[in-house]
Every structure is written in C-alpha cells, then in structure tokens.
Image 1: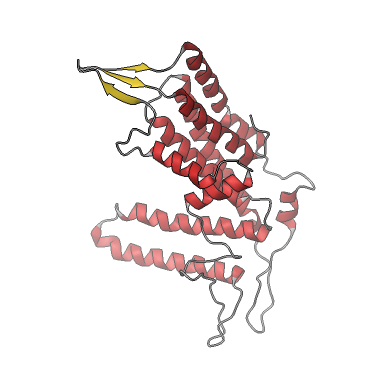
Image 2 (image 1 turned 180 degrees about the horizontal axis):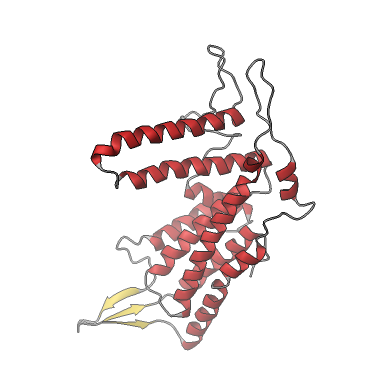
Length: 289
C-alpha cells in the first residue's frame, strides 16, 4: 500500500485549480472553431488565392490546385488541437483528483506533441504554400506510420498483397505531391522530379518532415520561449518514459513494513501545466492563461 507525501493543503488546492483550468481546453477549442473564416482574415485569403505548380511539362498549362488542398492545413490543425484538448482535459482530471503518480508526464508530453505540430503547420511566418507542404508531409508520415501499426495485425498469408496495395497507394500520393511541388523536370524522360534532400527524404517547398525534437525547437522559437525547445522536449520525454529512473514525479520509498510513501514534487507538476496550457492557447491564437 502506498501513501502520498510532499504536498501541503495549499498546494493540493492550487493543483486542483490548475486542473479546473486544464479541463476548460475542450470548451475553448469548440469556442474558437469556426467553419467559415472571418472576412478579411489571412485564412480567408489563403482559401481563395490559387496556388499553381512551379513547373509544368512542355506543352502543358499550369492548373490551380484543388480548393480542398488550400484548406487542408487548417483541417489538420483543427484535428491536432482537438487531440491536444482531449489530453489537457485528461491531465486536468488527474490534477482535480490528486492522481499524481507517473501518468501526468505522459499525458502532458502527448498534448505538447499535438500542440507543437499544429503550430508548425499553421505557422503565420511562412507562405501558405509552405503550410500546405507541411500538412502534406504530416499526412505522408502518418500514412507510413499507419502501415507500421497495421502490419502486425495482418495475417502472414495476406501480408505481401497488402504491402503491394500500400506501395501503390503511396506511389499515387507521391505522384500528386510531385505534380504540385516539383521544381525540375528530368531531361532524360521529360517527367517531373520528386523533390528530395540529400538523405532521400521527400522535400516540399523546401520543407522536410520534422521529428518531435526538431518540432519542439520550432515551437520554442515560434512562441518566443526563453527555454530551449529541444531541451524542453527532452525533459518531457524523461517524465513520460522514466525507464526506472528517479526523474519522474512521485518517487516511491519502501518503508520496510509492506507500505511505501510516494513523495510528490509540486514544482514539477506546476511546471508541466505551465508548459502545455500556454502552448495550447498559442496554438488557438488565444491570450495565454
């Protein structure tokens, strides 16, 4: 049996208040969402300004992208911030009910990943072509990750056929991206060249898919944080995956009589909320709490 120590009555009260704030995330998300962009807003302009391929094959006329492609970054960001809101709501519930074991760090990191990805996709400091490129790179990465998740549940007898279907679908997606983002034509066959970097990664409008540590660095720069984003993510990763270390919140000490005392780190819990709650408000374009 474990007992909890390390929190004063006032600290318990404060953490419950923080929990109440975190639990408003879903309502805030719904309140800020509008299916139609405001007249004169940047989104309204982006959704109605045609984007064209940078190069076309000889004899062809450049066609504008489909309208839905112009709105896709916003759709992705809405989904990402919704997922972040769900995780913040769950984190708030833990704070409200004094459940301060190892879980808060895991939930906070997941929320931060959704938040930082949304901010990267909707970055107001880049062109809408770049925002579209980032959204497409996320979709491509998601496709690849989904295959990894599905593969373990596919019967061995069906695996090869499913792999072929996956390869065909991915090739079709790459063909669409090539048509929209190609910057050169192969002189040997006259076909558009899929943009790739030196490592062979698909590169759209000069962008490559960012892993979460690089994404955290972008987050820190985007919101003007005084803390290095990469270091921030490293700290969240330790809290989410303690791997037997004493870095996580709630160190258990065996009392030698069949019981244990879990010592809670109040400052750590307060800082967790201080990372994800302001970040969520930044992602929604709202004032920080």
